[in-house]
Length: 108
Image 1 (cartoon, rainbow, N blue to C red):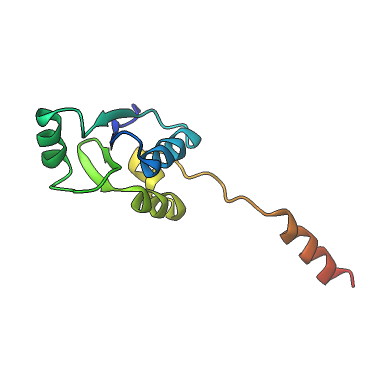
Image 2: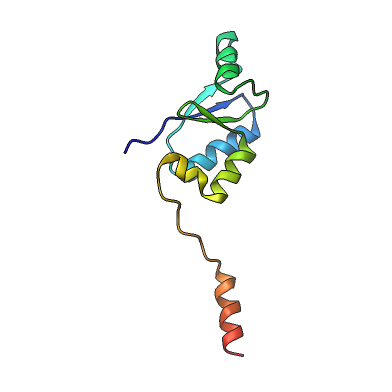
């Protein structure tokens, strides 16, 4: 199954845009950057694709705008982002201290 097309609409010198791109890189998602501040034609396309969004970044998956950085984080935490991409969410990570606390409780 082919991965859906992921676009990140951003502007120059935007820390949230950089964070969104790093998050997608960390999830091994191939994405394309679209600049909302390039020219009037790009601004019109940005408005049309994102249903009139006024902030960046805006993440678009196969033509559907999922929102900005906060929305991306929420979708990743809930596992819904992986479902949008058509793949299984990664197994939950267990923290090291959780093992120690459990061992201490079992072996006082």
